[in-house]
Amino acid sequence: MADPVRLGAADAGELLTLQRAAFVTEARAHRSFDLPPLVETLGELTAVLSDPEVVTWGIRESGRLVASVRIRLRGEVGEVGRLVVAPDRQGAGLGSALMKAAEDRLPPEVRVLRLFTGELSEGPLRLYARLGYVETGRTPEGDYQLVHFEKRIS
Image (cartoon, rainbow, N blue to C red; front, side, top):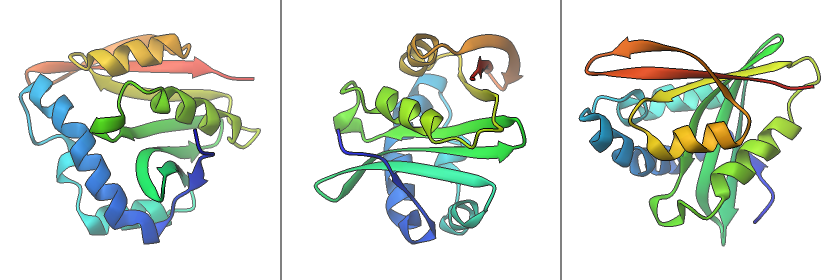
């Protein structure tokens, strides 16, 4: 696997394409194509990638962006969001490797990571449990629930 690279505003178009492709599976599972990653605009994503409180990492293979994750830094808490892997590369370990690499690159003051996913997202639910994230609760989101996770890091 290639080393993750930091993504910025210049990567917004390519990242938006990857994000939309990756979240179609989740949208089908949850019977909703209104998921935030699918309706986020290019302008909104560019703003997020320009935000100094957000770090976004990506993996490129032969120049193509195939995986990405973003973490919003809030003091001791890192809010993990938008872990995406290209549909044709899912199951190859890119999500796990990217999450571990992102955790290793966090500022030292970050002590806990938090994230959520839909209750019908079987792959992500298994991935987060395998990476040491612990379920902390559930909140309703239309016809399904969001599953919240947390991981303490040293």
